[in-house]
Length: 263
Image (cartoon, rainbow, N blue to C red; front, side, top):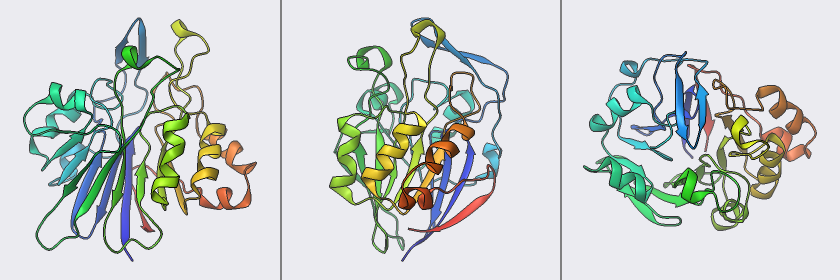
């Protein structure tokens, strides 16, 4: 049985700590107020800053980077952290752009994180589609991550990454028997592209969690930027109407405060 400390720093940025490991997802530490361009005429303004400063984190063993080419997942201050992280695991395209020691994984490919006196972590890349069908050439590659290590009681930990609900994402639960989900939501939309969505709605998140059957669901990346069309209120409403097991799995993280979970 593993006790894990999970700290939501803001947006998609989460610190995961257990058995001596310190893993960080999607580093975003820029101050609020700036507008970032995402290409093809789309943009978003950062509304909320990080709950913790980057310098408070100490030594990081690895960064799990779902994608490097959107500033709401890797901003300027976040990039400064990467050279000091023990390892960076990301998409294949992202590893080419980042160079150095970045490890690029295609969907379902695996790597391991090892350290003396700690459990070995198996990291498997999971599919993501960061927009409507056929949008990948425009929005770029994105990945999720499944983390497995000895001593997990309820099943692996899955970081979904920025994705809509589609068949690739639906496969994850059947392959791994997930115990904990770090669920990227927000129903991202841009005025220029109308009703098209680029991340899951709250209702889609509930549907996915019903398929996965995880014990703990941790919503992230649903507020703090102007391109999110659904915030916490929409997520709460969707889960309140869900089956009892899905309702019970919802666990809100307080930004800047570590939550302890049994994984």
